Image (cartoon, rainbow, N blue to C red; front, side, top):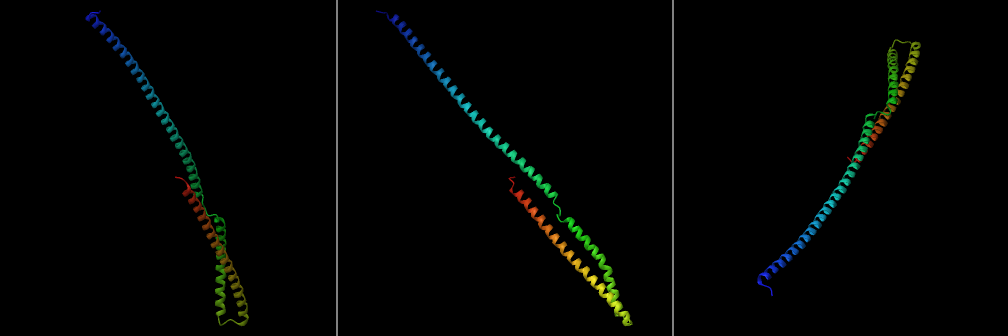
Length: 188
C-alpha cells in the first residue's frame, strides 16, 4: 500500500495533469471560438463594405444620370433663349413696304385735295361765265375722282397693313406659347 504522502503526491500530479489538460482544452476551445468570431466579424465587415460600395455606385449612377439630364436641359434652355432673342416680326419687310406705299399715297393725296378745294372755290364764284364754269367743273370732277381713287388705294393698303400686323402678332404669340410650353415641360 501506498503511504498517504505518496497518495497525496500522486493525487496532486493527477489533479495537476487533469487541470492542465482541462486548461489546454479550454484554451484551444477559446482560441477556436475567438478565431471563428474574428472570421465572422471580418465577413460581416466585408459584407457591409460591399453593401456600402454597391449603394455608392447606385448613387453615383443616379448623379451621372441627373447631370446628363441637366446638361440636356441646359442646352435646350440655351436654344430657347436664342429663339426668343431672334423672335422678330416675320412680316416686318412686308409691313415696311406697305407703310412706304401708304406714305407715297398720302403725298399724292395732299396736292389732289388742295386741287379739289381750289376748284370748289372757283365753282362757288358767281362771276364765272358758263364757258369758264364747264372746264372748271370738269377739272374738279377729274381731281375729285383721282382723289377718291387714291383714298380707295390708301384704305386697301391700311387694311392690308392691319392684316399683316394681326398675322404677325398671332405668329409671335404662337411661337412664345410654344417656347413657354417647352420650358414648362422641362424637369427643372
